[in-house]
Image 1 (spheres, rainbow, N blue to C red):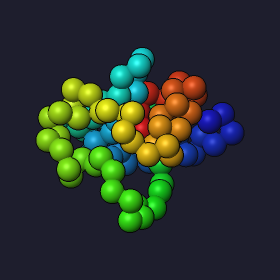
Image 2 (tube, rainbow, N blue to C red):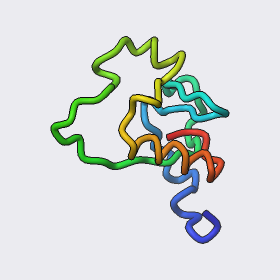
Image 3 (cartoon, rainbow, N blue to C red):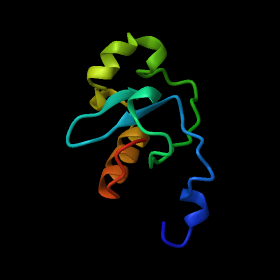
Image 4 (cartoon, rainbow, N blue to C red):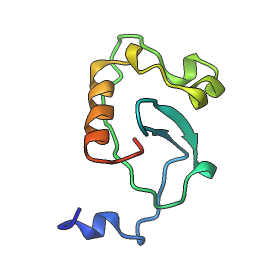
Length: 92
C-alpha cells in the first residue's frame, strides 16, 4: 500500500454496493450504507464455472447479513478470506 498510494487515494472513491465483513471468526454481508465510502477492501476475481455453490442469489440476503457459512464456500473464497484477514483487511 505504501508504494501504490494512487490505488488507495480518496480520488478513487468507488465502493461496491455490498462487501463481506471479515472481522474475527465470522463473515457477514454488509450493505454500502453500513460502511464508509472509500473503505479499504480486497477484491476476488474468479470464474463462476459450472459448479453450483452457495451464492447470494440462492439464499435470503438477510441470512448472509447475520453470517456467511464460509465452510460451504469454494476453497478460493475461503483462501481469499484467510489472506484478507492475515493482511488486516476487514472487507472483501
